[in-house]
Image (cartoon, helix red, strand yellow):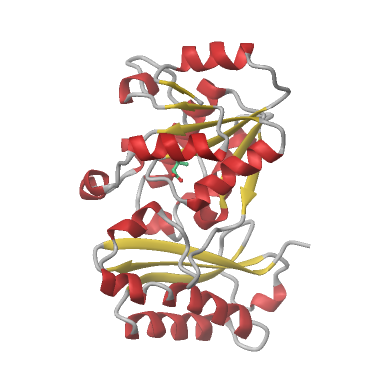
Length: 281
Ligand code: PAF
C-alpha cells in the first residue's frame, strides 16, 4: 500500500495504476472494523481502493472533542494495508485547506439543522467542505460511507447532487460489536462502566423497530429516552424521521422510508446510532 501526504502524488499514482474505477473511503483515522468493511467493499467491487486519514478541524464545534479525538496513524496504516487498501492519503491541514483555495458554499436547509445539526451547529458545513475537498483531491468514481452516520450520508448525497457530481455514494450497513454497540472511533474512550451501559442504545433502536407498527413515534421516543437514562446515559435526542427529508414522522406507519436516530452521552463520550424501521420501497 502506498502512503501519500500530497494529493498530487496520489493523483500521479491513480493515473498510472491499472484500474477501471477508484473507490474512496474518507476517514478521520482511529480505524475499526466498520472502516475495514468499507475498504473491503471497494476491493470486492474491483476498485482501486483509496482511503484518507484526516482529522478535519472544521467539523468539530467543540475544541475539546477535537483535542480528544483518538489518533492512531501507525496502526491505521497497517490495518488499511491488511484490508487490501491500495493507497492512503494523509494530508496536512494546509494541503486540504490551502490559503486562497477554493471554498464551497452549500445550503442544506433543515437537513443540516435537525438532530446532529441542532446539537453540533456548523458540523455538517465542515463535513461537506472537507468531503468536497477530498473528492477534488482523489477524484473517485465511488465514495463509500457507513450508515452509522445516517444524517452525514444524507448531507453528502445532497452535496453530490448540488455539485452535479458523477461520484456514486455507496452507504454500507453499520458494523456492530457482538453486544450491538455500533463500531465507532470514539468507543476506545469509553470507561468500562459506560462501555457496559452503551449497548442500551441499540436495544432502544431495536425496541423502536419492534414497536412502531402499534405505537406512535412520541410514545416510542419517550420510552427510549427513559430506558437510556435508566442505564446511566444522557440521551440528547431519539427521533423517528423520514429517511429522505429527516423530518419527524408522527405516525411511522404512514411513511415508506423510516429511520430511528439517536445520540447519547456515555460519560464524556458522545455516541450516535440509527436503525431503519422501514426500508424505502
Ligand atoms: O465520518 C467521518 O469520519 C468524517 O465525518 C469524514 C466523512 C471522514 C469527514 O471528515
